[in-house]
Length: 488
Image (cartoon, rainbow, N blue to C red; front, side, top):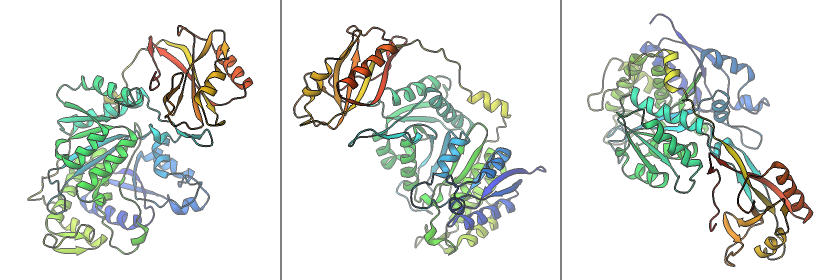
């Protein structure tokens, strides 16, 4: 391994510099063929007035090396500071978050010693798109955006990960019993892609029962693929039940760049005390080594790390009487791992990583989106959202007034409030906010024009109503592309 792979390294904030020093010392002694290029990120960059926490010049390093080993950072309190992780993921297209969650019992305390799952989370879409609006005095909106290509990318990655790592089962988790379209397309894409991997068992769980099962019977899962918000939640649940969030490493994978880190934060309260556990970042670095084609070094480090756990050499966060033999600090723990390089664990399962070699072109081909035919899109209706809170907010009052609107046959058909039909034939017990959705169709739900849409809005305005948002209602290949109201 004569040629060294250049990687970008950031020491971060809080305990970041300590655990990065420990991690890099292990990588060096294990023979990792890497050359580091250091960039500054985090609190000091924020305080220089750079709201993203990363200097513009640092992006050049990431584009050049395409591999980022990152310590945790501290985001200053107060408004105006963006999440560096979110910025990095979106800017570099890191669409797949990969979190192995494995138990190391009895050396790390857990009630679920057989846990060995990997959670693969979509990393760019969903509610984390961060598109929010305050539309009325009472109502706030956060848009959940799920795209078919984004869903296909992460689902395909999950199946390829399972295939390359000899995993037997992939479970999809959604809430498509409620969000039949947004979560529904994710589940639909999962079913379609699964057909290309007949050797892999598949399963689907509604996210609420799925989360409960992770907390109660985690050994039943192998690889889980899910949407952004759900994945964020269940990956922490899964890490915690294995015994310690502090041990977990994480990968954020894109088509061109990949970022590797610990899943925990910067822990400024213990910074500089040499007591932090470097295992999370070290395990993130192990994932990095596999990614850059050095699986043998990754195995060497992972096995030495497990041998260290077996020998009872533990940092304070996982120290337990009767199991642990010696409580050590950050650098001393790293030295213990280095001392055991070349050993394999005697009780824990030996680490083995895929040696399959793929060219960049082969990887891109395996993960490439498959061609699809565009649907025929037809505009048939309009939802107009109105800010109105006159009197006792009687739905009949607003409904009777809006019956006057007629734009060439485009008329009001119903009104909902917070998704529940309140006009016509609403129930007086339904609580109403100041945010009303008014749905307009032609009588036979035939095609409408943009001129009709504009005319509707003019007439709504003339009636004295404040419209705060509109949504066009389309069919795609004759199928409704919008949900029905509760009670419709």
